[in-house]
Image (spheres, rainbow, N blue to C red):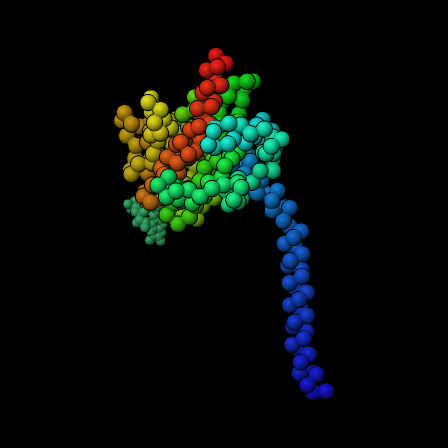
Length: 261
Ligand SMILES: Cc1cc2nc3c(=O)[nH]c(=O)nc-3n(C[C@H](O)[C@H](O)[C@H](O)COP(=O)(O)O)c2cc1C
């Protein structure tokens, strides 16, 4: 009898722990669709921000309705029909990790430190009638502490930067974390990716850009006390706007333009 009453608190605690774990697991399952919806909404907000189309107080969904989402095969630069890959449900980062959705990157090529690259990327188009106004592209690469994720908006000339939005990273607030700083982001506007020879030239420099300098179009102010994060941003630009990133896609777009005109 005494033994049974000694064990009672133990069994009560066990039962309580079991009930609590059921509640937590149930809440996690129930909240998952809400979390996914919030993630998608945040993604849309960042795409709009990069494109300069975000308006405080306006519905993100309504603003985003003017943007066309497509899937591009990175190696060839060709659009993939929606019947093959539905842009609405394609998860690019998850695909990169799958055997059939991505591939390992050779260390010589992997300047952005990603290890694996997806076969297909989402791209977001802003059009004015049939005219391509700008394209917003998802990019990522290693900083000092973390992988930094961003959207870069490029004008219809396929070189001029319209804007940028870094939306996820683990760099130090106040140092590398300044990649999120809206004033620093504004400094990207009007910069150019490619020089007249078509070579990818844009980089984050150490210190401030000399506005009158002949390289100013291809330079972004460095983040003070965050040289390694800045270098990571330069590396991700070099990767994503080079031959293994979106350059084949830009070539396809230019071909279409030439054949139309
Ligand atoms: C606590 C701590 C956090 C740091 N965070 C960053 C960072 O997020 N990004 C970065 O590039 N450097 C960071 N640094 C500084 C680097 O260690 C390194 O000194 C710096 O990148 C050199 O940049 P500078 O030449 O502009 O001083 C950090 C240093 C310390 C002590």
